[in-house]
Length: 198
Image (tube, rainbow, N blue to C red):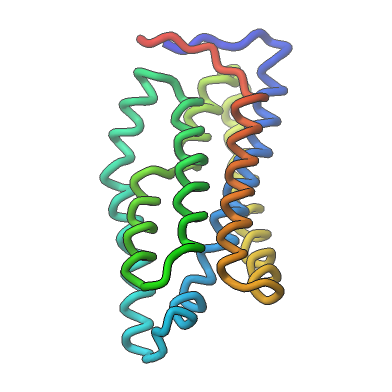
């Protein structure tokens, strides 16, 4: 059972949550579009092979995320929504950061698939928003959260292209990890959730 934070706190919590989720989406969309370029750096030059690896690296994380989403949702009911958002952000930070250490396409595939298992910040932020804002504000605040997601998806690829062009793909992955870790820090320090298991 989730109880509402005091009225003076929920707006501050939502603002911090919005900023953190925007940062998380910027982070993920900074690194995702450069995967085909990174695969070329790893020696995948044939068009058919590049297409296969790119498709697999995009498909498998979506499948693993679909499998694990209900599990994380159930754990959110038992342990709290904020904890699940932190899991998604910290897990993403560690796994995307580890991409900078890979030297073979199969390693990228494994890490991205694990990323699908552990992440899912949009769903986690959505249910957390619904649990901390008053019912009469829920629709508007959820709309604002989605606006942050769309803005993050717009800014991230441009930022990622600049970083990759200036410093390379591996630095891009490190930057994503830093962004996601920063987002998790904001959630841990600034978002309040009064939670007791139902």
